[in-house]
Length: 275
Image 1 (cartoon, rainbow, N blue to C red):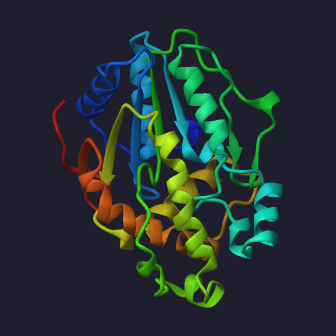
Image 2 (spheres, helix red, strand yellow):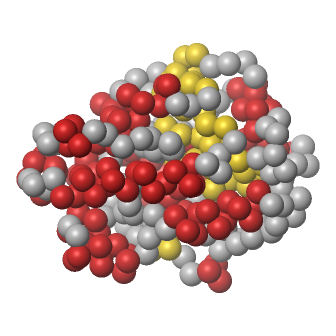
């Protein structure tokens, strides 16, 4: 993901950024992969960009990738929408990513190679053509790989029976879509195995996600003044696609992540290891 779309909001102090960078650089691997996860709008991309910028000032190349860089193309998602369930045409939930490409990219970086870095254009809802992908820098020292559901395990089948929100109730009444997404989570295990560390940015609850995600969309729109990003109503609908897995993340990740950093409703850090 282009880090310029997520300018620092001032919530990360230099000491906080330096501590996270030290964690990434201190991992035991040729080119370690530092996983950074949190719900939509948490500030993952901003923190990842801040870490890379600090590393660059020190002459230490650090690559930033997002799970969003690996969305399936629109044509592939539309095919899933026709063959399985219409909701699968929408990017985001588990099952909407090109896992083979993600694994290939991380494996190349972990081996110390310079590789193309996929990029996804959210406004056009398409992956950019490979000719427009940047290449990773020579001598990369670490990879910061951010995303909103790293290592989230599947729910028990019984938990899927009751709809969580109007999207599930009205557009997935028989549970086909949510079963597909839940089953898809197991397929991400080979990708998560590439992570040498996982930090969980824990927000106060899913109730803050609508505001945080809308702020994120405003940032995207400001960076693209000649193009039309999502409206507030579209964002409100979009976040419903993420609610079930997000709530599962809040339940499970405190016991899975290597480190938990608590955030307030303003995204400011409430508690974190000092590094």
